[in-house]
Image 1 (cartoon, rainbow, N blue to C red):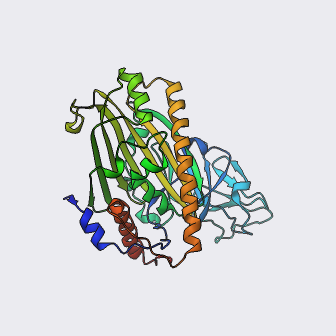
Image 2: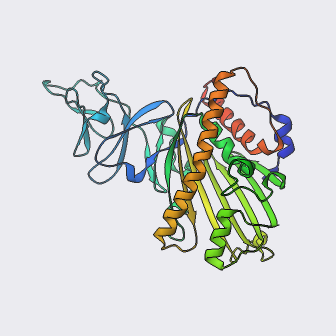
Length: 366
């Protein structure tokens, strides 16, 4: 059963500026589905260099990006049928990583193989499991159904950041920073003074915030004017859900104040989902895959483009802050983080990740 845990999380906090290692028995987004083609592409997920490509029947494949022979990057090679050929000496591997052709050899060396990784294509992303393949259950992929549900429309992109992936999740779980960092777009509205609740259940964390009868922030005000011809006060919501290991889905919106949004009637407002899949590349590099999905004016490609550009500009402000924060952490390796009430969601995520690392028998990296 879910339980309210703001005070509990605060009292149990011992979170410091430790750079936590990444759980490997987990699904991470390796790329957008549109980025994986018949041409090999190099990615890195949780310190593991991978090569991605598609077979003739369009199935995504993920292999270690290093040839068994001399470690040449397979991502520089060529896809032939369902297989990939090393660009250095022509050794060919099938989608399972097994060598199927070895030039100038009458027989194949049975040790000639490269690691292959479980892959699932879902929610417009290609997901990779870099841990124990026997534990790779696709049902563990967090819900992001708005990404490919016809009742929702939108788009997004990938941001590459020079910071640890947990800093990105801290940022997304504590949206009070909008009031100060994003004053010209989505900030304001008394975020820092509004009440909220944090709940946790197993590997899930939920943060809920409602702001009643307030002026709409610039981004939401423009959407309300366009969709409802309304400029008055609104009821605003931010409902954040974390899914293991690093997916955060944020239900956001506003409605004409007093029209029943807190009780479930959002018909007099606008509703969006900020979809976030945060992939650790290394201890200090992150790929942040995001999209903003809406359930109104679904056919307008112009609106999709305008929202994407606007949110992209907002995230540029986050990028600058997070990278500066990472630099400060590296300059102060012994400094401990101090936690406020607003950090409750992020603190629970850190505990979930630490428990996962302990279960894998892998240490927390200081």
